[in-house]
Image (tube, rainbow, N blue to C red):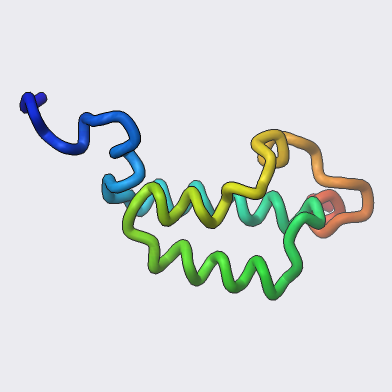
Length: 87
């Protein structure tokens, strides 16, 4: 760790660049929100496109900030695409 580097200051995490894995994780959050009815198909499509264009943690955070954290670990509601897809 280099002393004085700007990215180690509080609040600077948002300016750090994301990885492909970070973007894939954000898409998983958006998928879960869509399955749970928290995003429309149009909103989901728009945000996924924006995820691919995102370069920083702040960019990704803005796209998932309104989605509760428990959504990604909750079971899909009965009758949803995900609950009936297993087969």
